[in-house]
Image (cartoon, rainbow, N blue to C red; front, top):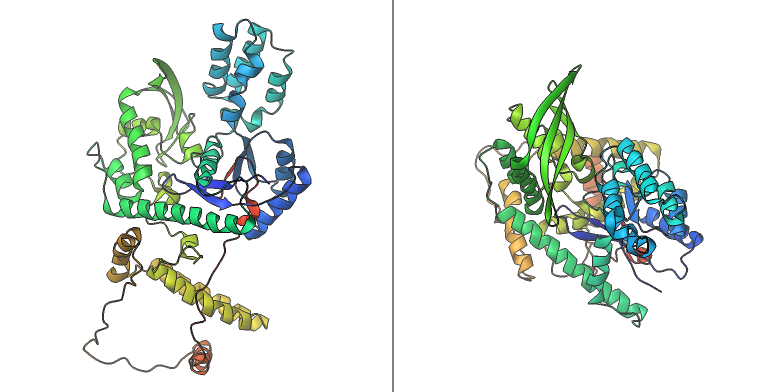
Length: 474
């Protein structure tokens, strides 16, 4: 059975494994089963977007299981077939290839693409080419201009999936048995986790210098991971080639044209983008679609902000998913490759989860208990969500990350508790829930013992057959 993973990207632009599985047949029925298994593992939440090759069975299965998911074909896989399908044409190297690529990449609106595609067919007499006509029929699945309004987290092709396959090649091969597969799978994941932890550590402890003195750039430097801040800086540097020109006003919307010089292989291409700016809400939208598709503010919006003297960046242009201090709940879950991981967050997560499982089992016995539990949880969460952790907790990350990256299994101990001075805390009447919890704690305190190492196997083994699949969830 072939092996290929579901992958996505993390906040460092690294590929991450979302799931994996083994199936023996690549027909629609098998893919429907596989996607449903994936859906179960994700608590019923379908991905927002998904990228695959042009597999017909997979397309049918996605439409059945993920009807609301935006499905995209890998553009790289499509264009690499161009020499095979059109290379025999007499004018392939005399304008056809460049015209096709320009039609795909340079069309900024759907109308531009439609006109350019018609011109391509008329000029080179391609109306009878079955391959091109089949692509046109499914243009909404692969032409960039049709996909601008969906967020793809920078995943333009499934080459990241192929790089994931290459990564696993160092750990497993076709003749391995299932036991060896599981062991090597965990070894590969452990390496991926270590790389992500190292990137976390670098983002918190090494600062990339700004290339300007502007507060907008400093804001991104402060909150974004190093990898994503570098992408912002690339757009910032690209501003030197931009020239903004006011066109007209439509109500409260100012329309600008922005000229740019883009390096394409061995020549410079001059392009013009249309940009819309709403001064009342300090909001800009560019037809390039970079922010909508990749979550990185484009050089054209930055250029308009500079012209309009926008000093403070609106929060809408700072995505949570690229921030270095984002809380990623999945990193708290212990797995069998976390043997050396003694981060306080992971240990606390395990303790809370064990207690919560017991509490929830008792709370579901009746509606009253359930509502009381939910109400109290919401109240507690609101307090913790709005309060900042102590300095001790906030500084733990750096020290424990350093220990982790060095491979140390030494447990990081908390500072000694010092008894504070002043008036001792007074007693207060406990709520019904607190009294119950106290009784349960007293009753079970002596019964709890360490039952050995917990070996939690992530349900990733279900979903690894798919050839070339990437997806995003937020």
